[in-house]
Length: 186
Image (tube, rainbow, N blue to C red; front, side, top):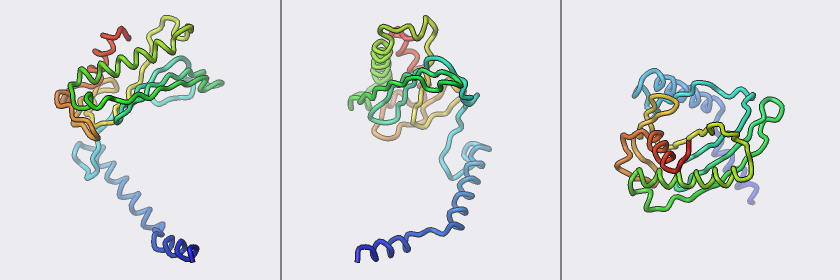
C-alpha cells in the first residue's frame, strides 16, 4: 500500500520536461532583461562587479568573510596554484548577538572586525605564512547592495533578522574597513 501511495504521489508531482525548459527559458529572459537595465525585470536583482574569475593558478594566503544571517563565517585558505590547489583551509563560524542585529552599524562592524582579528591572530600564531605581506580578504555580504565597484557597495535594505537603520545607504565595505583599521587589521 505504501509503495502505491508513493507511486501515485510521484506521478502527481511529475513536471513535464517541456514545462521545465519553458520555466528555465523565461527565467533566463528575465535575468537578461534585468542585466540590461535596472528595474527591467520582474526578478529582483542588482548588478554586481566581478573583474576577473579564478584561473586555478592562484597561490598564497587568502581570507574570506561571509555575512549572510545570524551567523558569519571567517575563512583562511592557503592556495598552492596549479599543482597543489587548496593546501589548507580553516574556518570559524560566529553567532551575531541579537542586540547587534538592530543596534548601530558601527557596533555590528566593530564586532565582526574584532572576531576577524581574533581569527587572524589565532591562525597566524607561530607561522610566517603572510611573510609581512598585506593579507587578502574577500567579503561576501548577502543583503541587497548597490555596487559601484568590486570593493564598494551601498546597502539598499536589510533582510532576514537585521534592522540597523543607520547602515542603510552606507557603503558596507567602507564600514568594514573602518572597523578593521580600529582593530589594527590591514
